[in-house]
Length: 380
Image 1 (tube, rainbow, N blue to C red):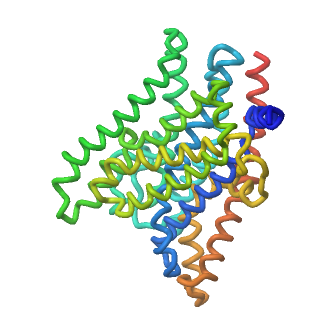
Image 2: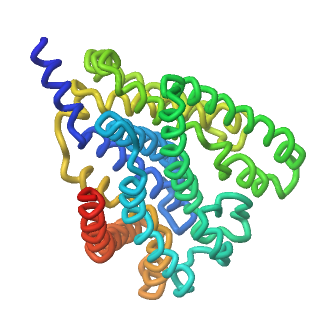
Image 3: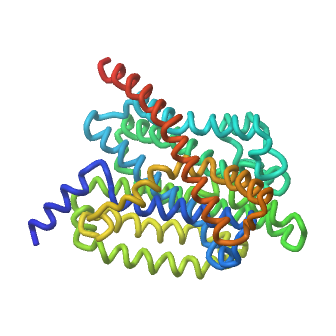
C-alpha cells in the first residue's frame, strides 16, 4: 500500500496530468454539442446539448488549476515569478491562433455564423465579454470566455507577486474564498438591478447574457476554484489525502455534476443564475481533484483519442462555429441534409481537420519561435 502511494506521488509530480486530458476532451465535446444546437442538427442534440454550457466552466476550472500550479512551481523553484517567461509562453500559445481566427471572421464574411461582429478593438483588447449583445452581434460570441481567461492570465501572476513581496502569500486561499463570495454577490446584484426588471420582456435574454453570463466579475467561480485546488495541491498533506481517495473523488464529482445539471435545468432561472455557476464550479473542482490523484483510474492510463482532442481543444474552440457554418452551407448546395447524423459527422470531421490545420500551420511554428525566445530569456 505504501509503495502504491509513493508511485502515485511520483505520477502527480509529473508536469503532464493524464487525467486532465480526459476532462479537456469532455469539455470541448460539451461545447461542440451546445453550439451545434444553433445550426441544423439531429433531434437528439436538443436532448443532451443543453448541458454543454458547462463545458466552458470545466475549462475555467482546468485553466485555474493548471496555470496556478505552473506559477506555484515557478515560485518554489525560483522564489518569484519570471513574468517575461510566463507571458511569452502565454502569448505564443494563445495569440497566433486567436489572431488567425479574427482574420477569418473579419476578412472572410462567409466564415461568420451570424450576421454581425462586435468591434475589432473589443477582440484585440480582450474586453468583448463586456456589453456583448449576443442577439444582434453574436458572431464569434464564444470568444467571451477567452477574454476572461486572458484577463485571468494577466491578473493572477501580478497578485501572486504582490503577495510574495508583501510576504502574505499565506493569505491567498482566504483571498480566493472571498473572491468566490464576491462573484456570487455581484451576480445577486446584477440579477436584481439589471435582469429582474426585464423578466417579462423580450429584452430578458439579452440582459441576462450581458449582465449574468458574460461579464468577468460574475463568472470567476470556475477559475477561482481551479486556483484554490492549485494552492492546496502544493501541500503534501493534500496530495496524500487525494491519493487515498482518487476514485472516490471522481465518483463524488460525477454525482455532484449530475445534481448541478438537475439544479440548473432551467439555466435562465433565478436559482441557476445565482447559485448554479458556483455549484457547477465546485462539482467540476471535485472531479478535477480526482483526475489529478495518482490513484484514480483517470490518471493511470492515457487514451489516444482524448489526448488528441485535448491537444486540439483550443483550436477547435476557436474555429468550430465558423467551420460548421461553412460545411452546412456546402451540404445544402450538394443536397445532403445537415439535420441528420451524416451531416453531424461530416461537420465534426471537418472541425478536427481545421484543428489539425491550426496545429501544423500555426501552433507548431509559433511554438518554435516561442522556444527560441525562451532559450534566450533563460540564458539571460
